[in-house]
Length: 174
Image 1 (cartoon, rainbow, N blue to C red):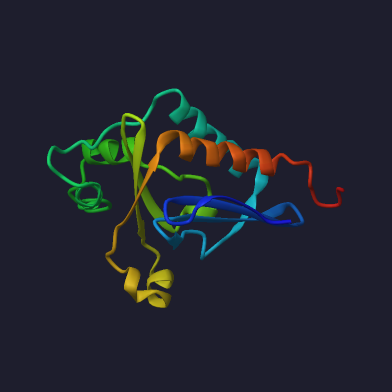
Image 2: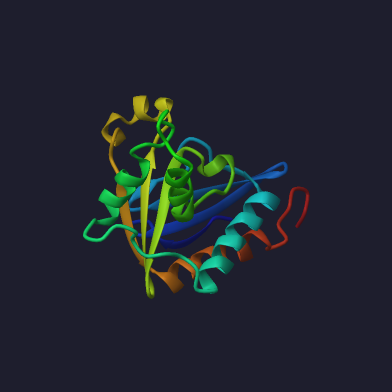
């Protein structure tokens, strides 16, 4: 059975079939399929990471855009400007890390994502970075995609995904 939670144009998660200890999970944001390179998750680790993100947001965490006057897209670009460069400072890395999200293991490591919170709304910025992905999807090269979503809607999707992953349907199970 496949379960879809959310809206693919904002943020959505779809949990599908088990394959031994792995389960198919597809994620979308801003109308883009984020898990197109790897959609098989190790449920224990993935579930824990998703739940941690939901709890973090539910507790009021998440910071607003750090640069006055910049859009979420421009802020993402500015945060990534010196990523990996020889002149990148610890302060650059720390600032970028403060906003980094979707660090949920191999399934989401093809996308660099940042999250900015403005009261009860989130802006999620995404950028595909893997060379293999960009060869297959040259239209994604250099693009930053932005999804805006109410905080509690995003938290609800994450908590719903955890509930689906907890549904007792395990390999060899009912």
